[in-house]
Amino acid sequence: NYHLPLFTVYRMKRNRLPCMNEVLQSSPAVKQPKLGCCPSLSQTHMCAALLDWGNLPHHVVLRVFQYLPLIDRARASSVCRRWNEVFHIPDLWRKFEFELNQSATSYFNSTHPDLIQQIIKKHAAHLQYVSFKVDSSTESAEAACDILSQLVNCSIQTLGLISTAKPSFMNMSKSHFVSALTVLFVNSKSLSSIKIEDMPVDDPSLSILVANNSDTLRRLKMSSCPHVSSDGILCVADHCQGLRELALNYYMLSDELLLALSNETHANLEHLRIDVVSENPGQIEFHSVKRQSWDALTKHSPGVNVVMYFFLYEEEMETFFKEEPPVTHLYFGRSVSKEILGRLGLNCPRLIELVVCANGLQVIDNELICIAEHCKNLTALGLSECEVSCSAFIEFVRLCRRKLTHLSIMEELLKPDDVYSLDEIHTEVSKYLGRIWFPDVMPLW
Image (cartoon, rainbow, N blue to C red; front, side):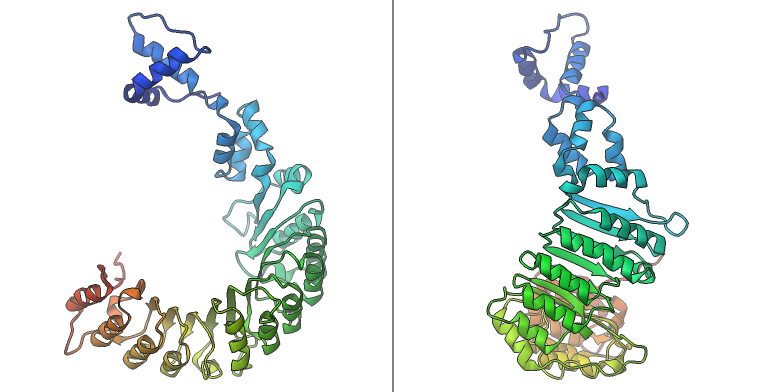
């Protein structure tokens, strides 16, 4: 057992001596001190006895343990019998993250194999929120699948499979991965949230997921899963009527999917994330989604957030924004043309947040003002490598005013003109926002 350092106890004694004296006098378990030449030292020892860490209530130690990494939690469990009891309380094992890394290829700490086996043997039945963080090695991915296949006596509600670096799971045997995932889908009858990235999951395994968890599934986030087709996702939407959040790649999106999510028996969708990436090198054309399908979705779920991430080159974006997709959050990870930015202002009235990483250093004054005039819900804007004149930028802020809660642009991208200089832009923008604002500045090291 450990005690507080003497200087800490002394400081507590000085600040709370009257209160502590009352506790000492009223406590039958503490022997009253005899007054002598060093009363403060006697009281210090008694304070330390009362504040014995080993006597902390279980719920307090449990709360502390929940913030500790697994290795520190295991070490703390060997301090005393009381802490070891807390270490095995089921509440402590409801949420766990397995970190699987090869020391030769990763700097991250890995969950020790002995601890993994102890968890599976003693605490698998208590696991509810499980995630796997795996490095780029195939060995780590296979180890994750071995653990998954052993989780047969559990009721997992949340599952996350994340590769910290590619390719990991995509390089392992597809049959091995699907077999392990199927074991979990069959034995966990209460899955409510699944996040899968860069995995060889396929349509048949999704069918098994639906067959065993259709009543409980609320969130499905899938990214870069090439073996899943639009039909596989459609199967999930048709049978999981309580689904509220869905993330997928654009190639999985279809009119049939949007109509299935708009069915009157389906729960209102809250969040739809779409990653738009080139599935094949040199891909130029992308399929289009009918406006009627989008309208059906927003009519059924008027508050849905439609989030789109674009990782395309300029020549690949011709298909998009010719009509009115109900997008609310839009992120361009690569250069986007002035023409596409111009379409946003005319065809994206629900836009709330816009981030443009680059547009080839073209001046986008007119496009920015058009967005401010037509996107009445816009509250956040981030620009990088996009040149804007100071006058146009201030006009944009004037149109948006205080509803613009997030505004970010590098100072070197703002171009002085005949009306405003860089020294004046801070004052003008701050006036319209109703708060102090400065452009971002590149740090000089």
